[in-house]
Length: 436
Image 1 (cartoon, rainbow, N blue to C red):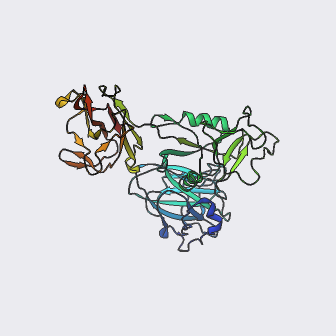
Image 2: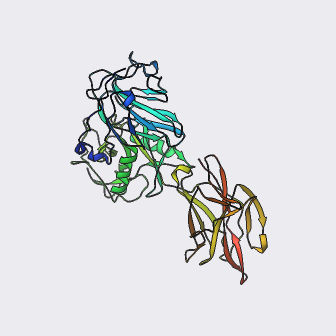
Image 3: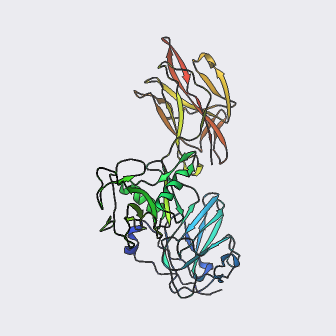
């Protein structure tokens, strides 16, 4: 192994400005001096002038070569137990990447040469708290490569600003095929769609957290639209929502392709600008899927009608992943200006008219009540109230407990009501949620 401890010189901040906030570590030439990094994306790397430090391995074999030449090293600690993707898509050069769970000199647990053109992408099973070595090199010595890479869970990521989930899929498909694949991709029981980008903040979040290289987005030209004209008329989002924000590259859209075909579909460059392209466009090697944050969990147990004539309903939004810390309960279809709170248990039940209530209790066992500061709610004139649940402080009769992945919890809302002119109480239906 090389005795050199030199590290790469940081890339120009100007060259990286279009990618958002980028870590400046370029990687260490010596595995023993691996550059520490944290988080998901993006991280800058540069193998220019690096020596070959690591060992060859058959796991990396492609086209008769199993070495990562001119390699640089990073050390990264996992923050959750889940499959993770290391992606160099969008970087330059003929790259290779490997991940190690052991010390320098150990065998890799995952390795890849070509995934998106000549750039590399792999998936490995990460364990919370485990330190991993990320090795980036080249197919040939002396070639040199640079750019950015991402490390992200192999699942959709939550954008806390809008409650939507996003994921980049690396596969070369036509725009139509990518759109169909997006719709067929279920997340928390809901279908996705090719991403719709409605403002600069959403675009910035995508670039900084997903580091896409060249995906399809959900924008295409409707040739039957009354506003259709070439090249800029008739562009529509797949969801039908209005196009209020665009970020076309200079001179785009231009409906001009190398083959002479029509360019009626939009792709996203790594810099964040958009380009119109043909239906089948080989350079577009990814597609970006968005899920709009539909309700989580499963309702159970029938509620009794309240004084409005409707039955109260409980729903959840946000994320079922404990690490996302974004689980929101909502009780709706309630009487106006009624006080209430949420209750919780690991056990379901059915008790009609408990304590003289006009409703049905859908929980059993040790039932906790969310009645701490700010947790007792008022339905207001809209007949609805919500609570962001602190998953590290679930109330029980004996104190607070923390939700852990793979646990199932059941929720319900209790509220004041008035039946036949007499004050009483009622309940919504129940909601079962399994956390991850």
